[in-house]
Image (cartoon, rainbow, N blue to C red; front, side, top):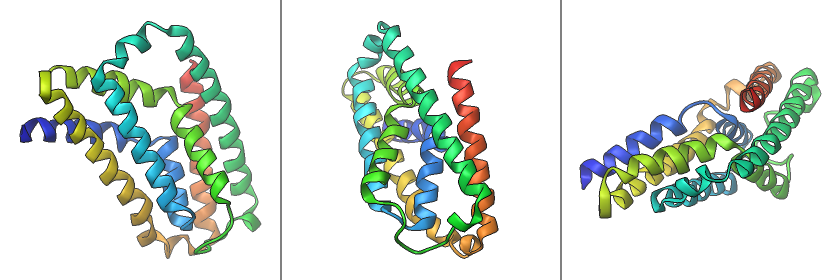
Length: 199
């Protein structure tokens, strides 16, 4: 069973570590040291729920509901475009970029943004529910749940590292130009992801 657990961990890590909207947001919160625990907890809990749904076989139901996927796709597009525009504005206006150790955004805003980035992203469903769910099914019972536990562990480790490990890079982001580069990169990433959702 250890090999199944490690297979789940490795499979999920390969998907989760890829640069995306969720990772960019967690990184930014970690660098700013704003509500990191809440953001990390939401990401980990959301992944655990989605992975469990995939392991339980919800993926087949999702495939049978293309309208639901279309709604999520367009909602995700709108959100990513909006988030990209706000990131571009932050990059252009350095006065709004501070490397403060705390303060700035509210907890409610951080939670709302994190939930939207997580649950309005169709790629999350494709990766966790469909792909990991399909991979887990090849291990039978109870192997698929061990696979799922490995996948959830990968999520936990990654988001803890990304959120709290970002503090090590804080000295680099003590200069507004570093924030400008980060936000410009986030803006481009969000807009590219938005286009990829609908093209």
